[in-house]
Image (cartoon, rainbow, N blue to C red; front, top):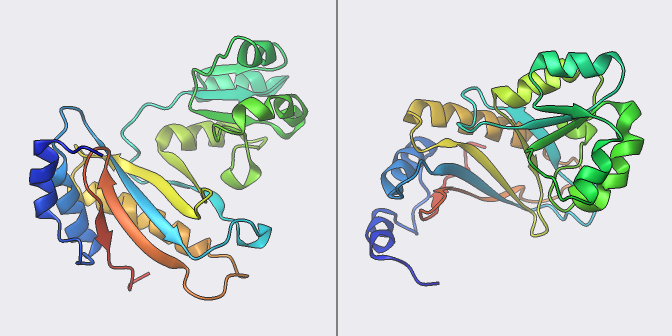
Amino acid sequence: MKRGKRYKEVIKLVDRSTLYEPTEAVALVKKTATAKFDETVEVHIRTGCDGRHAEQQIRGAVVLPNGTGRTVKVLVFAKGDKVAEAEAAGADYVGGDELIPKIQNDGWLDFDVVVATPDMMGVVGRLGKVLGPKGLMPNPKAGTVTMDVTKAVNDIKAGKVEYRLDKANIIHVPVGKVSFEEEKLQENFDALMEAIVKARPSALKGQYLRSVTLSTTMGPGVKINTAKF
């Protein structure tokens, strides 16, 4: 991969052989952000889990205390009284069966998170092949299959992020923007790591957190000392 002159300069700031304390890492990633847009700060956690085994799967969600810095569009599948409740909570789109062809046939995906009441999962299930690969299927573990649509929408709008293992058993989660103050990024990082540590599968034997890396959208990775976790 060809790297630009700017990237080659900032990478000199990072010592690849050093495991930085979280506060040092946060300060460093802010320094390495040189793009002309407000880059996202991301955490990449390599785990010792084997996601092929159901008992070692990790999936959940956490509300970051300072939000993610981005506007999230929420689609709610609901019926009856729950439609008005979802609209009052600030959902961007609310509907039911009528949305199936729009998503399936027209390729409409102008939303970031999908919430559904349990009685609508039969409808949403028909969209599995479209929503599944994009990580948009509602899931009880992530709090997106619920009768409490007000809480679900409020949490998402406030900065709720979902975490899950990818095929390589790595978790990738955004924890804010480069424009955030260091203290706010640190608080978000701490909240995420607390949730990840609690989510350790009881069936896992051996090391849980293999490595934790912090980076910006366009910047180099900064490895974090995981001893405290």
